[in-house]
Length: 247
Image (cartoon, rainbow, N blue to C red; front, side, top):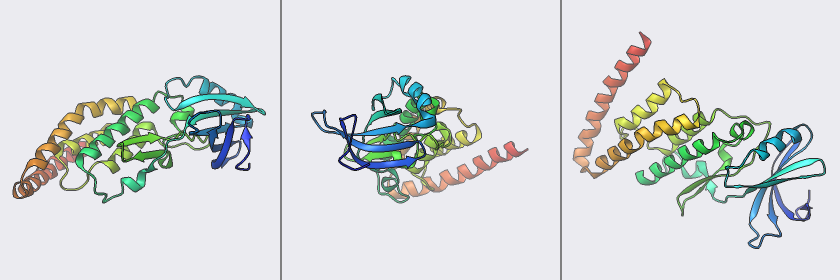
């Protein structure tokens, strides 16, 4: 499809974002929109038409969803195109990001998981791919682009969000015990879905934030000895728990 071509005489195609059998996603401009903002068009044909008519008919709780239409025996869904930087570029291993920014970003991810868990299964299992996450550092927002490839299926919502949060939160020997206990609890008793993961996070959110706040207020020497004591304590505590599990 050429860049100048229109769909429904209204959506001017800017580029193809993703393509597979009976599916293509475009970034397009709604020429009838006063602000000329870009949108995502997920276009399904053949085997997927009936399935996704139902999916998008039931999608009423997504703020980025703008509607759907049928044309030429196909169905197209319209979503907001969210700009921003790639998730992996912002949260790379040694990124210089504050504790406050990381905590806020993690909290947003848990909220995303809660929302996505409420969507129809075809979206829930196909939207949480890394290249769909966009980060707006200026406004400190994490957003999703809804490119929904029907043949791509990732892990459960809870597992994907947990893995994302692990890359966002600080790692290493300076991490407070309460944060380590949170992730250990997820390993020992994995949540079933995004809703349960969010509820578990609510229990730990304030204690983790408070632990980081106290740690950052300490002087360098005091913090040095705190880290040593904390890791000795964690070693024995974790070893004992592991021994109990394996008995």
